[in-house]
Image (cartoon, rainbow, N blue to C red; front, side, top):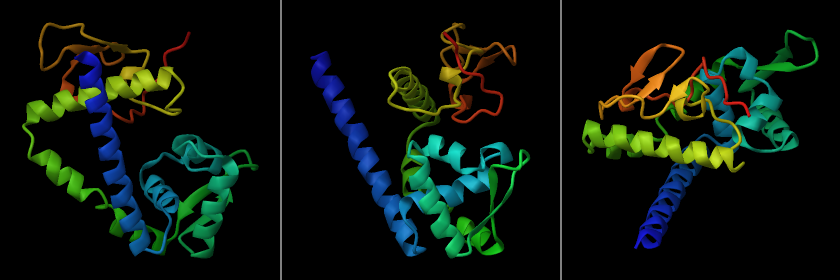
Length: 196
């Protein structure tokens, strides 16, 4: 019975993944981009400067550095981004051009159908879903399936199930506060990975 439920959950996650890939391909194609190029453009709108370089983005997207370099080269030829010397002089900081920022704004709503579908769930269901997904991703990270994560469930400050409150069961030792399920982070700037 449990194995059957696990298989159905895995199948549902796989279908969700297919749907998201389809949405990404559709919006990227509308801008004349590949899905990876779209990811790069969108990442450059939200990543701190230290993560706006080829090696960091390759790790983030779990692709090889040459694959990401090809995507960046194509975006440069399309005049959507530029490379400038980084702080150490060797690495190149990636920056969107004015046209690149315009394309990023047009791409920003690529996942609107998913957000609309989520809005149909109760806030409690969304919070529980977030908690469950973050725990799954953390386990996959520990198994080496997901390479880069900066979320609560993989942080050394995260204390799972530290409180009796079902709406805020976890605890952040850095902030010294309970963590409501609805406020768990998927990309925390203060994230410190668990070591050992």
